[in-house]
Structure formats: structure tokens, C-alpha cells
Image (cartoon, rainbow, N blue to C red; front, side):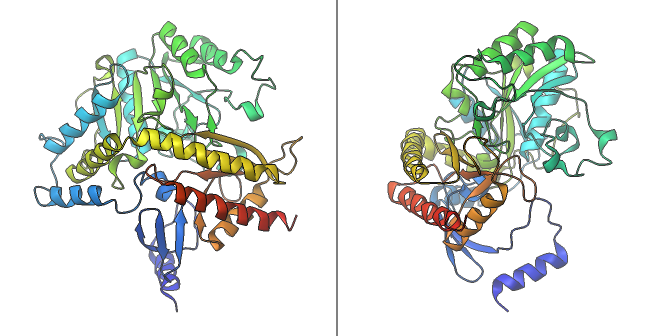
Amino acid sequence: MSRSRELRAESDAHVIKCMGDVDMALVSGEGTRVSDGDGREYVDAISAEWVLNLGFRNPEVKQAIIDQLDTIDYVSPVFESEARTELAKKLAELAPGRLEKVLYALSGAGAVEGAVHLAMRATGGTDFVVLDAAFHGRTFATIGMTYVDPGMVEGSNKGLDRYLPRQMRVPNYYCYRCPLGLERETCDLACADYVDFALQKGHTNGPAGVVVEPYQANGGMVPAPDGYLERVHEICRNHEVPLIVDEVQGAFCRCGPMYASQRTAVEPEMIILGKALGGGLPLSATITTPEYSDLLPWEYGFTQAGNPVACAAAIAMLEVMVRDDLPANSERMGALLTERLREIEKDSKLIGDIRAQGLMIGVELVRDRETKEMACEETDRVMAACLENGLMVGKSGPVFGSNGNVIKFKPAVNVGEDEIAEMADLFAKSLAEVEATL
């Protein structure tokens, strides 16, 4: 039996798989390359599930982890920690506006919950506005803030209703598939007006804030249209609630700037961070203004939050990003990859739309460009062909099981031109193989 098959058998016997189940065992990686249990190599175009923004085993992040382990490997949140405080300072220095207070957690959903606590304490309200195709987590506090596409939940929320908080859901921004049937040139951002309505009349116990992704990832790789965040922030100010920007997937040069919000003039009251924050280790955070930084004693917290090893990895990652001007590299390499994808689109039967900010790139596949019928089955086949040809890409949709029709490209933000060309070539080959059978 191959090593991959052995790992699979052992996993099936002991591990509860709860986030999909790809029959593939990864055992080593470096940079944008990863190898499976049988020694087969793949080009990673998704930064290891958008967690390793500097690629696998970045030498400076690795050294920072080793150095921290040689000093102290754990400090309780009850005590002061050099690494924890230094990271908070760096996050504040790089953040827009008056964001200067950091609340640590372990996962993106945990950080969203932290933002919820902070907003509720400051406003006295309990209800949040979220977008229809938003994804903010799968904990009890965040399931109610995450998309409810019938194909996604498929019974996964059954029985959980008694625990789920009620939230105010409003139409999504999605210019390619406008839920309001409007055209961007003439819509005057009508979708943003629903946020205003919800804050006025949609709540039960008072509004507490608006939570929005500047670039929806799991919801279909959809960027907010120009002016949307600015309009929503103005609405938030009129209602005296915070704009809470979920950048769990979009921060740290993923969308170009260090923070995705910095593509706009918006200075939000909170930004939620996760995924890549810990340089591959479990770490997340909410960074907020002083006005939204008060909690009651013991109402929130995690024993491992702000673990010094994870914080040391995060500090090293940020230092590399600043020193090497990786926001600029993300913009350049993202433009290059997008250009190559648009060339591929010209001869493609399936590509309906390409959406990109920096190295956050979605390729939506459709069966018909006029009707825009989602090509979910074909997307799975393209992903399988990519793996067969040695390329790892992601899928968005919303997704659950066989749903989803958007291919995700999220390579490491320090990627080079040769690697971008290789990713594009492998994708073109894989797409052509599937389209030849249609």
C-alpha cells in the first residue's frame, strides 16, 4: 500500500472530517511547491488554503518560530507577552485610520465573535446586518451570519436553530449576477440602500453593527463594487453603529494592500483578521478603535489566544511583507495572472467572468454566457484535471459538496513571474481537456 493510501486509511479510522474530504495526503512543502505521500509534486495556487501568504516553510517565518521556542513557548493571556504586544503594535501601525486595539482569538469565526462582543457592548444593540452570500464562520454565533444557500446548508443547520442568533440579512453585491436585476452603470448602488433600511427597521433589539467582506471569498470570489464600502460606512455613521470589515481571507497583501480595506478610502471601526495572520499557525484577531474596545470581565477569551510562537511567526511575516514591498508584488503578479486568464477566456467555452484584486482571483465557469447557468459539475472536473496536471486551485460558490462554480487562485503573495506563468499554463491545459469533452 502506498503511503498516501496508508494515511487515508489511518485518517478514516480516527479523524472526523468536517470541512470537505479530498482524497489526497500532503506531507511536505516549500515555497509554492507541495508533495503528496507518494512523492508527487504540485504547484500550489491557493497558499495552502490561503493560510501561507509567504508560501510553505518561509525561512524567516521558520526562524522566528525557532527563536521564539528557544525563549518561551507559551504565555497565558493573563500575563504580559512580548510577542503578543509587539504584534498588536505592528498591526496597528499598518492599519488604516484609528485602529489601534487588538483582541486575539484562534480562528476567523472566533475573531468575528470578538467583534460581535465589542460592538454589542459599545452600542447596546444586539442585531447585525450581514450580506446574503457572506461567510463569517460556522460556530453557533457565526452560522447565523453565514450564507444560507439551500445547496450549501443541505440540512447542516438542522437542529441548531435554538442556538442561532437572529441577524439582518440583506441582498448581496454581485454585479455579474445582481440579485436586484440591475446594471452597475445605472444602479446607484441600490444594494447598499438595503443596509440603511435594515438598520432603521429590520432589527428587534437595536442594531449593533454591519459586518461585510470587502471581497467575498467563499460567497463566490466577488469584490465589492467601487463606492460600496464608502456608502455603507456613511450609513453606519448615520445610525451610530460600527462598520466591521471581515478580512479573514483578504488581508496581508492578498487583495494588494496590507489590509484589503486600503483599496478604498474607508477607515472602518473594526477589521477582522485570520487565516494567514499566524504565518501558518492558529491565530486570529479583531483590530478596533478605542471606542469599540471595552468588554466585561471574563465575557470572552481563549487560553491559547495570542500564543507567542504564533505571534512571532506573524511578526516575521509582516516584516517580510513590508521590507519586500509585497503589496506591490501582489498587484503586479495579480495583474499578470489576470491578463493570462483573460487570454485563456477568449477561446474558452466555460469562462463567464474573471474577478480580481491583487492575488485574490476568481474565475466563474458557466454553461452558457447568456443565461449564466452555473457550471458546477464542470468546475469539479476542471479542479480534478488541475490536480491531475499538478496544479492546486480552490473552489467557491457558495460551496458545499458538489456546489460551486468559481475557481479560486490565491497564490503566495511573494510569487514570481515564472510561477505565475506555470500556474496559468497548467490551468489552460486542464480547462482545455475538460472543454474538449463538452
